[in-house]
Length: 181
Image (cartoon, rainbow, N blue to C red; front, side, top):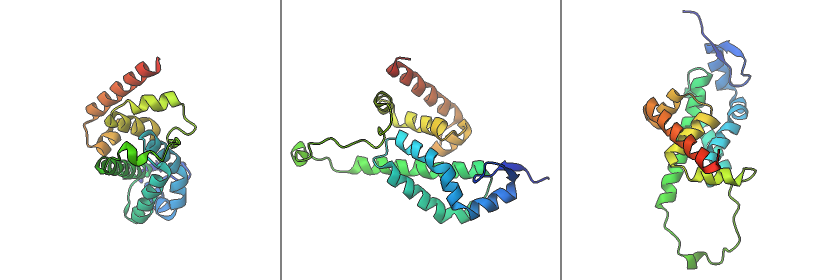
């Protein structure tokens, strides 16, 4: 069987599958340059409390485990977004377990804290995204921001492709209603 052609993550040019894997393993900086903006967008869309910090956590894990990764550029992209998704799930669990502060405990903090997700983003869109369920935000983030196909999103979220499509449809319909489109 001939060596299949794939896209190199660092250059997005066609290379053989064997060459792509070798280049990916040798160029974590190129991988970061190519995927970090999309991963950061995904983390922001998911409402991460500190998306830049979480991005660094994701890429620390990526660099740590990169030697063991095999596959073409699409496989590496799926792997990176799987790590990002797991970090988001971990953050949600951590937030849900934190003890709730009483209003008297936080009275001294009367100035508003900027939301990392809303910096440079339409506040109406941020509000509409917050109205979606976490699963709907996961699907939209992975489908639209990460630009992953349905089958890959289904694998990452451990859902059937039909369930991913249904979640995406409900999310886009709800966003359209909320944004008046």
